[in-house]
Length: 162
Image (tube, rainbow, N blue to C red; front, side, top):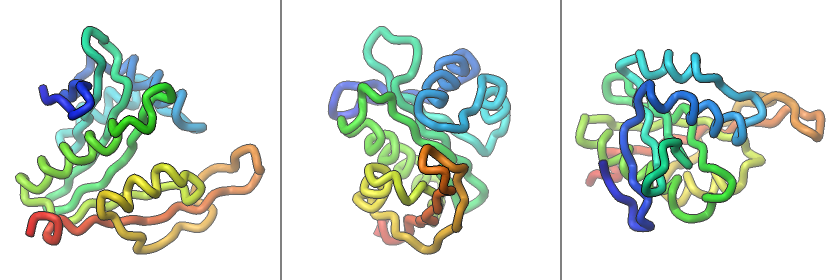
């Protein structure tokens, strides 16, 4: 277990956390994953889920899902509960994951993010991710009835670790 600067604890998540993960995901994304999906992710040895907790709480208030394949990794999902946003929790989870990935010899981390999610795009850019491409009409239509584009972003860990 690790502690973020703001006092939240971070730990690797397990099957006992899947209900809380599914609940958090459903309040963070229009197309959400259920407990069964998270159970499958946790059975895949390439996947890791970090969760942030308040002291004494059982359900995570934030999580980061990362898949590692050899010397590359992909951020699959990052969610922070609405009441806990803008407190450095997402950045803290990413920092811990990036440190772990560097130790495991990962050279690049990739992700896709809705270009309309300005808070997430800003977070990733502040950490050092760069936009390397775009997937047009990637995300399902929201209230605007228009499909959203995804930005493809990459973080070069060789430069970060240097």
